[in-house]
Picture 1: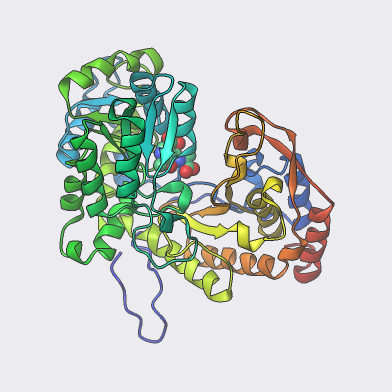
Picture 2: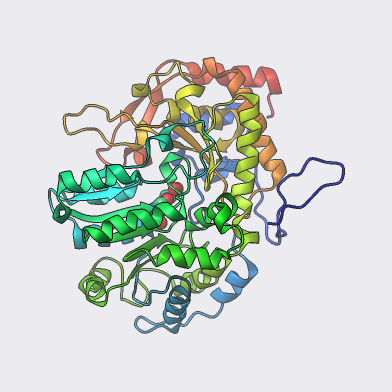
Amino acid sequence: MPAIKFYKHDDIPMEMHKVKVVQQLTLLPADQRLQKMKDAGFNTFQLHNGDIFMDMLTDSGVNAMSQEQLAGMMKPDDAYAGSESFYRMVDKLEEIFGIGNCLPAHQGRACENILAERFVKPGNCVIMNYHFTTTKAHITRKGGHVEELVKDEGLISKSDLPFKGDIDLDKLEACIQAEGADNVVFMRLEAGTNLIGGQPVSLQSFKDACAIARKHGIVSVLDASLLQDNLYFIKTRDPECADRSIRDICREIADQFDIIYFSARKFGLARGGAILVRDDELFHSMEDLVPMFEGFLTYGGMSIREIEAMTVGFDECLEMDVISQGPQFIEYTVNQLDEYGVPMITPGGGLGAHIDATQFVSHIPQEEYPAGALAAALYICGGIRGMERGTLSEERNADGSERLASMELVRLALPRRVFTLSQVEYVIDRVKWLYDHRDMIGGLRFTHEPATLRFFTGRLEPVTDWPDRLAAAFKDAFGDDQ
Ligand code: F0G
């Protein structure tokens, strides 16, 4: 997306694609949204998509596909074993990342399962800049523990630091000393660090951290699910990379790592996943896990059509005109809301705009899930579905106490190439209204609490009748039909 200059208008982000296929949306009135939220147990994962106007839950598997991707899906080489589509994908990944050993898996967490099965034994440590929910769940399921060593500044919500996903190199050395290098089974760096607001990692930090891991004989793993956003930020925020191509930067990052895995629901703009393993011996030691958990080694549980779409999608994820749309829409959203005084994670990152619920609803204690409550309120007031990324997304400590998240965020994801700027303006407007009525939002408590990944299937209720009062205030402001 080039920076298009306007004549009589402030510059705004510009879509570098046009719409060819559409899905009709409906906006249920506030009364019905209130009822749907109650039916969903105040958990936005439990809403039906047909009841949602702006689905900003995630960018995972819901990015718009290009005509080239759809065309690719028309020529799959369907085979249980030896599909040519798979080999086309492997060739493309080798061209991009320089690694030809590829283990296919049906999505990102399936890759994480395979990595955890292969590496993690009880008591082992995995070092990360920051965890992702499913990654951590797989490691702890095998008896391992996660050490998160993102720099302290990464957790400060309002900031102008360009690379808030960087790992703290001093903490990294100290952690390796404390754990013992043999007990650290791998170091995982997450590009476009999801749970702290889609914040990028700098090229230098990738290089320095991997050099430390190498020195100690620790396997380095890149979670490249959000690499396309991270690449955009390296090119636009690191002056030394301004004149380099995205492919060139991508290859330099890849060259640092022993293993690269990704969710192709994000990187690849389709639905799938894969693990790339540099060392042949290590690769062969993991191969048997793919047929066991996923499917044969040349489809890994994926539809061959999706493999064709991914292969095209990888190239698109390295094109500036494609990968700039998300970050630029996010920056626009974040800046508009920040100017109004809404507490946002700044600077805007990838994946989505993130609201700091700790400040937005500072009157709600963390034990009453402020980010979950804010996400529920946003649906009631706008038919907008965001995602809680806070204490609800954590798991309880072994003694049953709450593990309070270091950040309480509501994520408004901007799936790539999906929304127009007027839809984004609508979201900004409703968030502003809600911010002006934030005192009306109250807390939530569980009525059904699963032991793991409780944010997916848990059910909650409001601690008071605040949702009814909020819906009534909204109707007073906008009328019965909005
Ligand atoms: N790693 C990162 C950084 C992710 O953001 C995700 C998924 C995964 C791994 C797991 O991949 O979903 O294909 O199994 N993130 C989605 C999200 C779920 O909504 O942020 P998956």
